[in-house]
Length: 316
Image 1 (cartoon, helix red, strand yellow):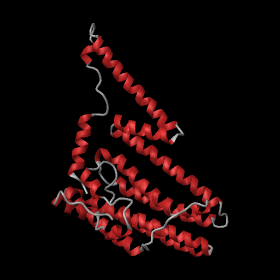
Image 2 (cartoon, rainbow, N blue to C red):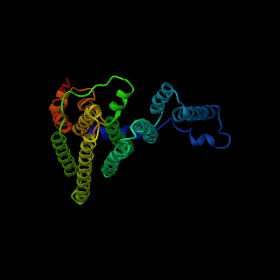
Image 3 (cartoon, one colour):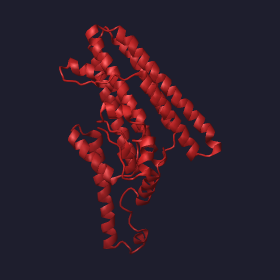
Image 4 (cartoon, rainbow, N blue to C red):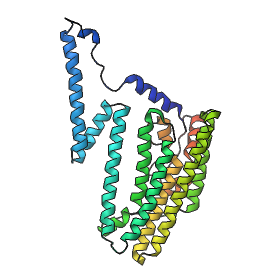
């Protein structure tokens, strides 16, 4: 869904620029190195030094509080290119963190390690398909932010698929959804998502771009297929596990399906830059299972809100 508000945000950001303006070039003429020019130059240099210092903290610090503070300040000082670098770094950190926990988990289960690694290959195939879909879409200057967000969603699914098993083995408390999520729920949501994406292509692109629409459609169907292959293989893994372990593994599968359903119903619109209207109509992560099952899809909710700007959905 291409939001007019998003376009307005992008224009404003472009016009606003990324940082304080450079000194006036006329001040560089012979005899023109005035006190005012020197002060402006120092202000710009100070800005750059402060920004470089924050990047050092963001990239190298092991203190999460310091990294978070640097991230916020860099967002305030930056532009699209800076934001792209920030989210890209955050994504790489997330993936590395999940990979580390995964390796710890499978190392604790040498008898099932080969099977778990084979299952991870199914996720990796799905992950590559997710990237292929995102790269076919046009999100303008927000493209890098959007693609990174899509990849983070995929890593979130991988984490959900084993994280609670690892926590239990570390004697930590866990919680699983009480609702049983089914393949039919996911398939219905995928079908609705594809229909909405096709409608967006028809509404916002000219006839000579319909080939791109078909390519995009096929890419989503490929992603859908690989998602189903991953979930099917998890059933194979489940049958090979000891009874107690199988129960937790199946709970992780159900949580993974819930997470995927949530992503599909939000139609990837909560990624990259967005308007307040979109963010207010998104289904939040903290929503109840009932709200998730009853949520008709962001396009339906947003259309209803646009018809009545005072209306917002209930997520309890």
